[in-house]
Length: 168
Image 1 (cartoon, rainbow, N blue to C red):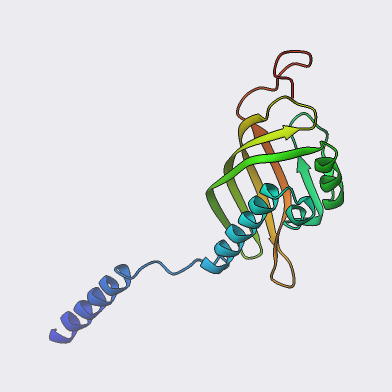
Image 2 (cartoon, rainbow, N blue to C red; image 1 turned 90 degrees about the vertical axis):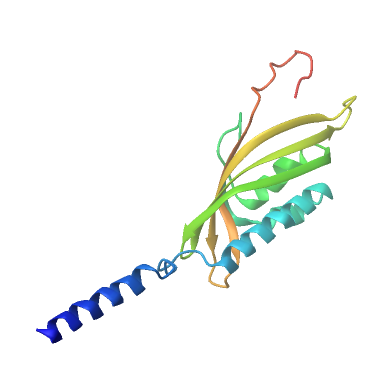
């Protein structure tokens, strides 16, 4: 009889110890290093945008990235994005980015964030300022590098009608 109580007590103590352990990292969950690498790549993009270095900014995108931008058809490819941005003849006068969430599993992650920017377009009398939000899908390549493979973003304010004051 005493042995049975001893076994029950041992099992109860064992279950209590297991229940008090911090949760183990989910199999395949993003590591702290993965999250840090994605944050660092995002920072590289911000610094490149502030330097108006579109070749460096494009380096966060995979060669076959798919971009869904406001008021435009789906755009495919890093080189296409780089040419699109360069076509605006703009100067970034302010850009900031805030990541609200990074999550994912194994070699796939998503980033949800917001941004603010001021852009000076060639020939414009003053910069245009905007705020917006974005969602990105990142993939880790065979070499361990994280790259954006899909991005969608939009502005917080509706687009200004062509011909109206403050036209974009």
